[in-house]
Length: 449
Image (cartoon, one colour):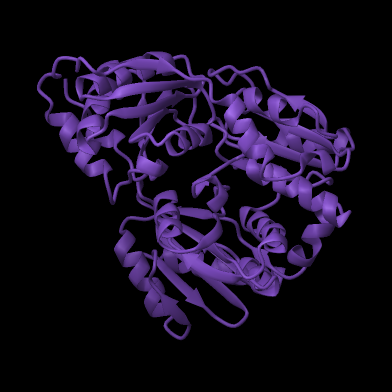
């Protein structure tokens, strides 16, 4: 068999099951990962898709052929795979998941020691080559064992050590697990706390029968937004399919953008860790660096992508990192992202401040006006980026990731998609009118012929 090139993405492996990614491919990838890492023990976890069990078993068989034992964590959120690999000192691991993609997809998120991810810039190209040239698998290594390990007790203890959940006010919180694996962890975590939980789609079902597990799309958050209002709830929390991202809805049913969440999390963490350095991604509005600075922290801008955040957090003393896409990274969590630590921290912040979510957001919403991410299909990505540089040459231009341009009252970043002929625009300004005017101006330059 030939493993298709296209399933090897910038941050993981992902494709249609079984046309693009099947058990034979997973077996070869397991063998290649064990060989590449020189691993003797690998962790493995999976999301609830019907194809995940077979892919995990095949991965473990391949790992054994590559000389590594597998510690199988079973059905877990992705963050628990990271925790298992890092806390148990394993040589690496694999999470069988296609995250927020529809059920006909599956994939593999791969990490090395310390749960540092393999990416398109480091690790995945070599893995692709190794797995594609494997003519046949070696015989299973005699020393390569297989064990199952229930990580839930240890992970719940880890999460509970990070906040005082018993001090939460008795908030009514609508939680949408989207039939993903959050439906398994959330009850264990929130039982015994004062939180009054209104559950949506907590039945774990990897066919995702109610809506796609991607809360960033408006059609998938519509129901929880309406439910928060109908229940007169204090907050809504929605997770994606593998629960490594969470999203918040305020008490009025308004979706909270990821950069505002980053700002609130920074505020919460700086109360405990004055002067800490905090990473944010270059798509974010100025709300993030402004709040970090006002809280006495050090704002550090970063390239988009979990591999770049995690690598930098290992190199530098960074407390926390946030991306507008809903990925939040914590030094207290082995620098890994989590969809549950943000939920705990926001509930703690609301409890401490005695304020509603909308009240906490009001200073941000009244000052920072953001476009959200707008995707445009273009014939020539490089030519469009060059047009932007020429047209906005009077601004302060940086090229850390795509093209960023800063003016006194507004700013934007345009970067290319890793996988499609798309340019992604994020723009912020100090008024709604200016944001809309400049958004339309920049889009016009992007789409010029």
